[in-house]
Length: 373
Image (cartoon, rainbow, N blue to C red; front, side, top):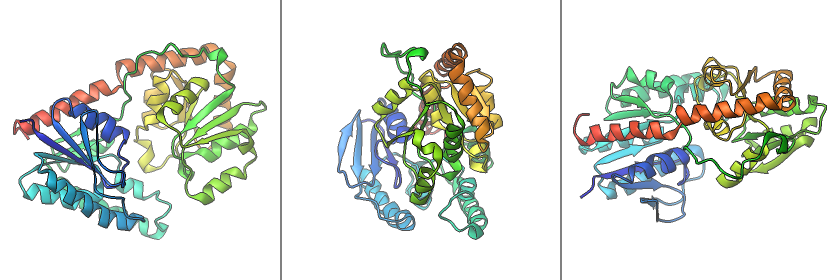
């Protein structure tokens, strides 16, 4: 009988790239894997993973953290798995309950939560520091009790290593995809650049749209993602540069790939906030894997990835003129742009890909099942 593994999320969608497509599907080749979600869409089995629905998540952040977390916990209890692997900080109290039941428990820290709290627009500024400190203390004390901590970046790993020696980073690097015959040469791409992913004020879309207005060409910005809050979307739409935006809103992964093929560069220009400067956004590596030159924030970590591999340009994300100049350089220098695209694909092929991270995930699980952790 195969070892039973149960992944749990109270906040993420059932087909989340990190949780489902990368971790669960990879583990399903070796273990009996279930994934507990809360979306009201029912149960199904895909790619060897049994997805179990705990019912639609509660409305509102705080009720979700309380009510939905409890619902997914009770569903997970029914599985009686050997290893429980959970992905949301509100599940930490339930992780401790599984520990007390003699189960192996993994906490997967996707974000540096205490630093992330400092930039949450929906938390009144006056309370952010106090909440951040309280959350960090609770997360740290809980980490001591976990069988293992998995983190999404080396930076988060360094923080948790102080609390639990069984901590490893498993990065959100993209899948290695076979080269497609449908690739488009740079000169035949559409006169556009792209910004793909959820957007809020701190993700730099304002400055990108202002940069589009500064460009004295008919270049378009292909945007695909959700903008929040609504008042920020209205603010963006009032900018003069919005007339150059083609808003695809939220699209399927296949449609995202089509946007990449048509674009001349990919943009990811987060503000220099504590939770951003040491993050590794999926989009950087997706752009690189698609052969797109990357225009990114000039954080030391991002420069080490992008400039070291000569696959893009790093700029001050809060300077529209700098963003505009980077776009213009790539558009007006097709040979350099092609070289950047080739270099990015090579770096992903050799370093920044899921194959290497998957082996680390297998190692963690092997150690847990062999009682080495």
